[in-house]
Image (tube, rainbow, N blue to C red; front, side):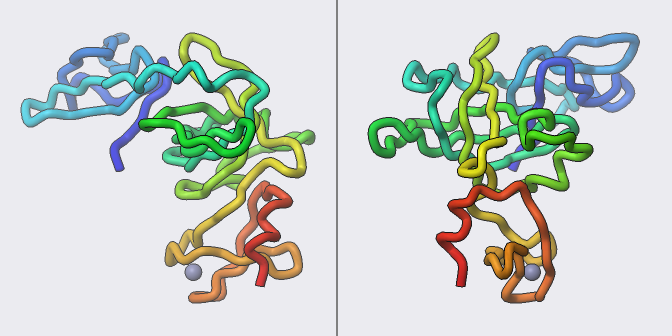
Length: 186
Ligand SMILES: [Zn+2]
């Protein structure tokens, strides 16, 4: 899995890298110009490859499924998998979207990492598309994590008495769960 950027994200310094396409240099600190995949070549040139354009079928008000690819507080980068609209539809290609910590619960959330983790599958509402970026919200009870994996051993977690438990190592975890998670209760 590569590293991802959002506009303005610090991706290194000029001591480490040479700034390439999609990168700007601010007093020796290299920042991403836009959301995309961060690439480093053999000559230590760092560049940002932009994500593919958002498909027209993705629009505010739509419910989507996606996988959390990366978290850099206060946002998570989510790869969209399925678009739910008049029955489920599969989006072609990998499209990225953004979940901000303020759109996770109705109350205050301090750390996004306490609510979602890399690898989790979430069900989310598209609230906005701004500058080609899709913004998500998971506040509603039906929205949130629908499948989660153990942070220690990566096995799927199952729900037991509203707590996520790993069947392999016994670890217990919490997330901002969708009430659909109960579908995998055992
Ligand atoms: Zn485990």
